[in-house]
Image 1 (tube, rainbow, N blue to C red):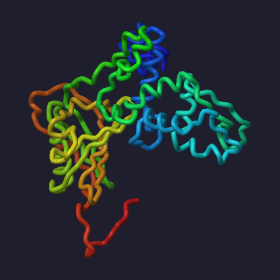
Image 2 (image 1 turned 135 degrees about the vertical axis):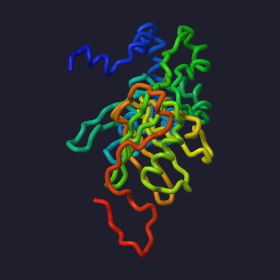
Image 3 (image 1 turned 90 degrees about the vertical axis):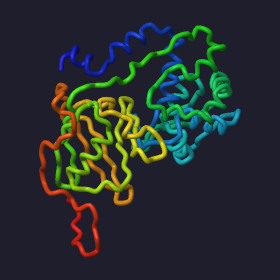
Image 4 (image 1 turned 180 degrees about the vertical axis):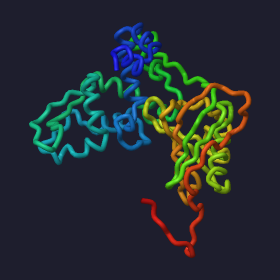
Length: 310
């Protein structure tokens, strides 16, 4: 891969141009919001955590006494790995909120922290952000919009005028080709981008001879590594599958979703986008292109022989 291709693959040129126009203060707070507001454990390859970093750091901050925290041995610092997380401790130091004293690391035991102590900047910032940290659920938003903390902090940092602007996901027209797999069978399905996600849900059930008497959700990761769900129209929380078009999904060929059907029997279909072909006005509905393998039996009873998937 050439450097040019590498750049085009990993960098969003529009975002980079916007970033280059921000001053030092604006960049500092953009990075701070990316961490405290929008950051999550999934980006680091960890399991999803319902508490955002701002909440965890504020809670941790309140547990640091004026004289600081000291950890005389590894066992004393073990709790930091879980709350607020060692990555948050490192970032608290990087942003100038606290100072830490490293200890002598031992082989196989990881980072050794001897002590942490609050700094005045951290005290001031978290005092201002305390109400936001306890009530804000920014990480649940579908779209990332920087500048959430600007109304609170700008009076103290008047040079903060602009924020990083991220292009919102647009509609991608075409015919989407999905390979849907479950157990040892798979189906290839074509569906127009203008059809709602509920059409794909129904087509998957038809393709595997499943009934449609249960709730479902589609699960995928967005470009920030966050897990997103789109649910059955009868579920309580939006977004709903009958309101989201296929072409609205932030999917590229090669990426996958999970179609989670029947929360009792817990069927999980892997839905991989193989290609996006040019729009074709002759194709107005979903179409099953290929069938491979016998569909699994939807319901199991005691009279049936149980065969566990390999």
